[in-house]
Amino acid sequence: MIKWFDRCGVEFSKSDMSLSVSVDRGRTAEWGSNSLHSLFAQKSNLLNYKFHRFVYELNSFGPDVLKWLSEQEKKMTKMTGGGGGGSGTGPDLKLSCGEWLTSHNYSQYFIDWYLIPVVSVLRPSEHRSFDRSIDLSF
Image 1 (cartoon, rainbow, N blue to C red):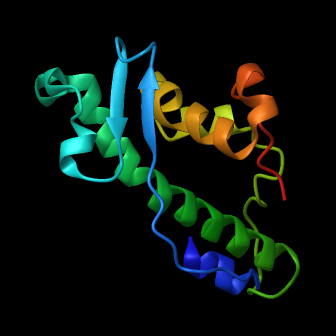
Image 2: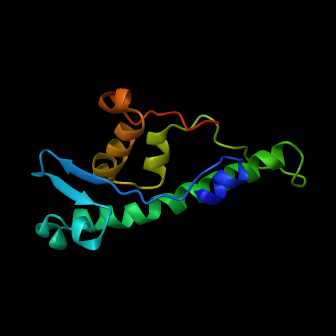
């Protein structure tokens, strides 16, 4: 993401950020991003397939988003004449967050245990109405 911010001219500073999530007061899920110990704050998650898939998705999300953004940028360049002849489809300008998550096979657990908590931190007024329809258009 830092490379993408740099390409877009966004200024940034290095920081050490972590996230801890407790869903349903720790009864459904509880994890943190600070260490392996905090990731498996609930020891039962060591044997929980859904949690292991969530960890995989957590590690895949950033690279998947960057790959998709790069593909959209290439499609836009072709459409505007900067990338060769270009038949084919244009960028997905009206793709919702839910459509993107579905097309990339992200689980409901990933949405509930990561995406909603992150959205609620970044945009607190919208976390209760998150319905997977956030517009990804630029």
